[in-house]
Image 1 (cartoon, rainbow, N blue to C red):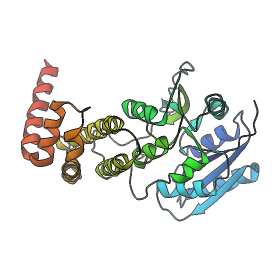
Image 2: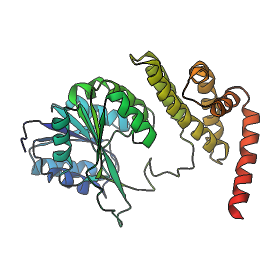
Image 3: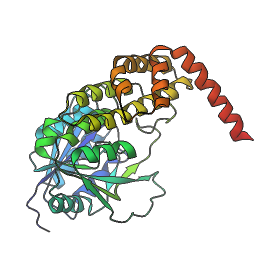
Image 4: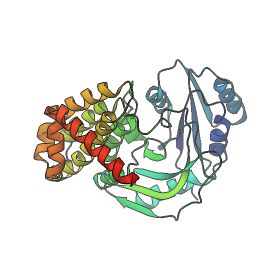
Amino acid sequence: MNESHKVSVVIPIYNVQDYLNDCIKSIVNQTYQNLEIILVDDGSPDSCPMICDEWKNKDSRIIVIHKKNGGLSDARNAGLNKASGEYVFYVDSDDYLEDDTIEWMVSCAIRYNAEIVACTCKKTNNKNIPALLTNCLVEGTGIEMLEFAFENEIWFAWGKLIKINIAKSCPFAQGMIYEDVENTPKSFLMANKVVFSLDGRYNYRIRTDSIMGENKNIPKKDIAKVIDMDCEFISAANISEIDKDKMYKHLFKQLAYNYNLAVKSNSEIADEVCKRIEEVFYKNKTLWKNSKCISIQRKLGYWLISGHAVLYKKGYRLYSVRKKIENEK
C-alpha cells in the first residue's frame, strides 16, 4: 500500500525489561515501514534505558527520550511533543502488535477518511493467545463511537491511531491513573469520523505486577476525579443535550460501579474512594437528576450515594450477602 502517511509510535517505558524487546521488535517488524518510533524512558531503574539505546543503534527510525520519572501520562506527553508524523499511535511497553497492525489501521483511516482508528486487543498471559477475530469494522461520528467505546469499555489510550492535530490538542492529564477515561472523550469529540476495528490486532499482556493488572475488585482511586473532569468537559461540549445525557449515563454508571467495589472492599483506600465518589455525585446531581437516559432506579441509588451514603451502604451490603447465599445454593 501507499506508505506516504508517517505514523509516530509513542511507547512510554518504565520497569519492563522482561517485555520491552518483544514490544519494540513487533513495531520495527511492521509491514508498514513509514514509522517514527519514539521510546520514552521514564527514568526506568532497570535495564530499559540500555535496551532503548541498543535499539536506536539498530534502526534509524527510532528516537529515544531519557527523562526523569514523571508517570505514564507525562511519558506519553513527552513522546507526543516529539512526534512529527501525520498520525500518532500509542503502544504500552509490555504489549506487542501483530505484524500488519499499523498497515491495517492506516488503510482503515484512508478508506473511511477517519481521524481516529481504534483496534481491540487480544489478552495474553504469555502462554495463551486467542486467534484473531474477523475483520469486523464499526464506524460512525465521534459522538457515536464515544458512546460505543463507553458501552464496550474500550476507552484505553493504547491501540488507537489518531490524527496528529487531535492528539496534540488532547495531552494526557498528569498525576492520575485511568487518564485514558479523561482523554478519550476529548479526542473523540474532535473527530468527524472514528472507526473501531474489532479484530484483536493489539496484544495486551496481562501482568499481576502492573497498574492494570491489579485486582479488579479493588476500587479505582482516581476514578472520581477523572469522571468529574469528564462531566465538566461533556457539559461544556458543543453537542446535543440528548448526546450529553447518553454520556452522563455511562459516566455515572461507571462511578457507581466503583462505589460498590469500595463498599464491599477491604482495601485501605476504600473509605477515601467512597468519600470522593459521594462528593462527585453530589456536585453533579443536576446532571443525573435531569437526565432522560438514566432510569429512576439508578437515580434513586445516586440520590442515596450523594446524600444518604450510610443507608445505601447498609442496603448494598445486605443485597450482596443475599446474592452470595443464593449463588451458593
